[in-house]
Length: 182
Image 1 (tube, rainbow, N blue to C red):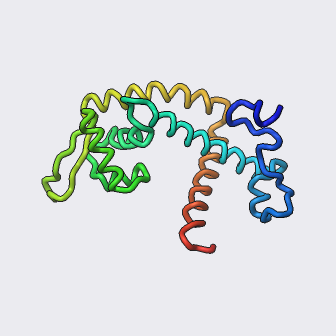
Image 2 (cartoon, rainbow, N blue to C red; image 1 turned 135 degrees about the vertical axis):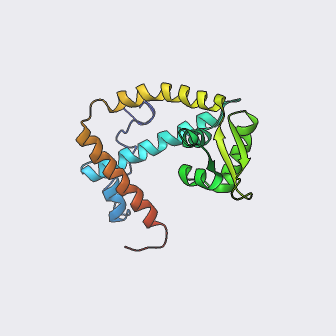
């Protein structure tokens, strides 16, 4: 099977740079070397990240629907009484300015309400409306069975190990590009 014949996201020979290519740094060869567990993890991680990017792209191209990032804000508000834009930004890993703009759209759509904090009038607190809570519940009902099915063949120990690997990768990316050299 050639790379052009492969279903979207399937790794085939030729999709991944030749790990032995002499002009590649050793660290890059290790990340993409399918003969090692670390290389296979690197390839799988890259594939998962590409799938998330495609998901984000598809959802923002649908008229009259909210984006993947906006769902992130709504899910952040689910179960919370009220949150500030800063708290939501931290939860969704977005800038407060981006969150403020998104909240404006979500408020116009009737999914959130925003009110000034009584303790600090500079802070605007957001909460889900009944319509917003219903949308989150509906989305959860759509996603949960697929999530469970995707993970069903793995043991709890395997899932715990995967979680530790993903946490380590998050730490790696956070420390790799903030100027630290450790």
